[in-house]
Image 1 (cartoon, rainbow, N blue to C red):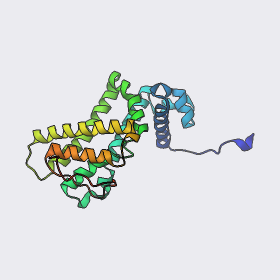
Image 2 (image 1 turned 90 degrees about the vertical axis):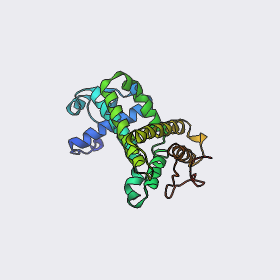
Image 3 (image 1 turned 30 degrees about the horizontal axis):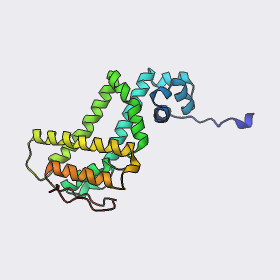
Image 4 (image 1 turned 60 degrees about the horizontal axis):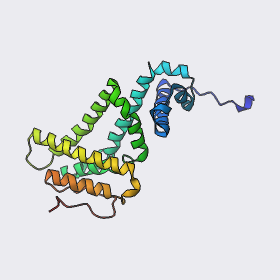
Length: 223
């Protein structure tokens, strides 16, 4: 019936493009990469399948855009507290805030783990997806390395790089475990473990300001 028709809205090209990316992410989260067909994405975004070609040259291009969005969003969320409140923090607090932000929601999240896993096979098989993965891995690690380099300790560039790789591996492992089994960890436990381990690697105490955890973070490396 005419009264049942949805009102017409003129949406910008960027809005429609964003809707397609978000639709692809939703479908991968719900059913894996195989669920994100062109028709399903179009249906979820409320457009015709043919319109997708107006915004993306191929389904692969849309998949890459969705994966880039996921990775960029996770890196941004890891540093959100630091970017918002960190201007007056010490170097140790800035690093600790970044580590803690990487080990709490919304970064640690079963849905995001499902998304990442849904894209993982494409990362192995598609050069474009691999390039996006590499770019975002380095963007995160480079920021971590910069925060480590700012600490009040002597360390050359090679040492800072090695420490960043080691600390990143710790964060990645805890993120994977916490996202896969969120019920297996007490509130704030992943953050405390991450801070304790990163502190031990660097040989300096990390004391993040205002950590929402049930007990205080460690003051330094384990004896």
